[in-house]
Length: 331
Image (cartoon, rainbow, N blue to C red; front, side, top):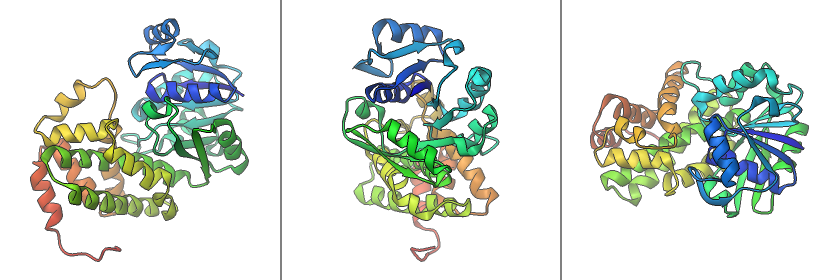
């Protein structure tokens, strides 16, 4: 296939590697002309994937002129930047192609999932926009560490086609028809990962983190069901799988943000010092807004919002969660 990967961060560069290894013709588009030139000259992405040699078949560009005549477009951008970039590039893309979102977030304001953002910005049917998600840190996938993910789409034939096109011996791709569940799980787990980092930063233990992951997953599922997702998706790769790896991994930017907050640093100070985006910060706002809109009780998301945006002490937030009225575990 002729494939364009939009976004030359760590994940975009890694996906370009995957598709090139699979034998496709791949163009990697960078938002920055300077970055495109740097990657092209070094044949490496020194900012996001240092030490990983770029596949020789990958073409790197900042020019939208090289994006036409593609059969598959994979958007690997920060969720909050996706609409602007997709709108900017829309006129030069083949609208008969298939589009994949490899982002994990919920757009601020509109509260749209990224596949909805792409469908709207590109003016293509939702059945042609798929979601790729799962426990897949770019640093590990790029080094060919065995990884399993899921691709979700409304059209079974298109989903199957992209599944085949994306699969490698070290990168196993499962399929799903639950786009809503896969996207919500991938976005909301980042909020729980911030909490996991707070637990580490404050100095709480394994018991605390196990409770967080379990009850966080219950909140994710609760909102997902309200929005039309299949509850079983949250026990799969996009849900439990991604939740566990993001809460535990040293590669997790969201866990890092939480850990630094737990140590007493301010959110603005932390995010300004990072060269990558922690999607969970914006998703905390969007997830809370969705919960309010659909009258879904999500106490962990609520307390995370208060810690991040209202300056609440993490220990106080923890105690408020621990001393809530007793509940049945299945509610």
